Amino acid sequence: MKILFLFLFLISPHVDGKPTQDRKPNILFLIADDWSFPHAGVYGDPVVRTPTFDKLAAEGALFLNAYTASPSCSPSRASILNGRYPHQNEDGGNLWPEWPAQFPTYVGLMEEAGYFSGSTRKGWGPGDYQVSGLTHNPAGKAYADFKEFFEERPEGQPFTFWFGSSDPHREYVPNTGIQTGMKLEDVPVPGFFPDLDCVRNDILDYYFEVERFDRECGQIIKMLHEAGELDNTIVVMTSDNGMPFPRAKANLYDFGTRMPLVIRWPEKVKAGTVINNFINFVDFAPSFLEAADLHSDSMSGESFWEVIAGNKEGKSEVFLERERHANVRKGDQSYPMRAVRTHQYLYIWNPMPERLPAGDPTVHRSVGQFGDVDHSITKFLIMEMKGKAKAGKPDFYNLTFGQRPEEELYDVASDPFQLNNLAGKSEFSNIKSELRDQLNSWMAETGDLRAKEPRTLYWDQIRYTPTYQMKDADVSEMIKQYRIIPPFGPYSREGIPCLED
Image (cartoon, rainbow, N blue to C red; front, side, top):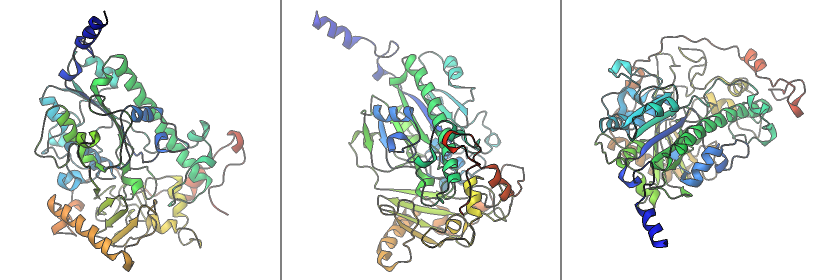
């Protein structure tokens, strides 16, 4: 009787009447908008609650060194979709560009191979994909939500679906985080922010939206589980770039480029796997194609399945870059950066150090003053600190808005917030030279225009697709608006002050 039971078990279907190994895997890509490492429970954050992300990590692989190709929405998402570095995507290396349709995407190649594709909310973008002749966003045809997509999908057809949340992108509703019971005193404040209650409250509002993203991802995963499709689906949960705060998003420091990432796929990924090797987001597309027995010669990334399985040595470094983020400098200027990150060091090259990294101090076209930093109470408080640096504390204003030298070098092992630039110290000259050579070799090998023309104006001249014009903000008024309004339990006093005495 036991032998008969075992025989029936071995020949029985495992998922929806078809053996898992005979089916093409589905791809479910869950991407937040402006979420930084290490803001998840499984990474040790003491405040934010991310049960969906944490459960996926327990059932799959958790990545400790996953990096976006660029800390800016459009170029990051383009690199995810077509497996190419931002500088290889021509116009697609900027924010708000035209879509570089000359390069195939994993979504398009899977559609041609019989996959059913869809997306909801923010796919590739912001930018103009219709000018390229596409009938839908490069991430997939738009649906109201995953439920509508799943119901329309032909039975048994493999799918690729992109859930692009708008969380935790700004603007935030002030005080939403503290109202959920999160406490100001528990917030870990990065060293490049002033440790003020209003800044802690701003971070809590960010956490609130991270938690909302986590809940929505959980709802999609639950639908897949109930349909019997979860174990035949590659589930990826991550973010496009760093948190929308000063010296994070649009910067090559870790809070701009280092991303939360989990991948669940029981067929190839052992539960509880932890990956310490570097992953660049250009690796997603070739990995998804390999899982579907497809391939593209146009991609620069490498499949990571053998690394996850422990059969291949992973990368010991990752290369990072950015060009024009928001259009916030006179003459539509970019602020170019290139970098190499190893386990111990971060080396950054700023080929045009005379330009301001956060944008002009008055509005040029978009966002407002210093427009490469999203408007927030944290930004406005730091703007108010110009010329007020205190002994023994970081100069928050210059760290955020001041000019930077052509070269930056940080020992990230001892300086996790990248505050102490070692590039000018003689004892680090050999390390700096080695990393510079490594970066230059990568730029040359990947056809980076800046390898031959360091001061090229190519990305300055690319069309910026929005037509609106922003205005400077009233900083003092914004500071007033962002005070914490009572009553919120123990914080029911006359508003928490935003400025130090």
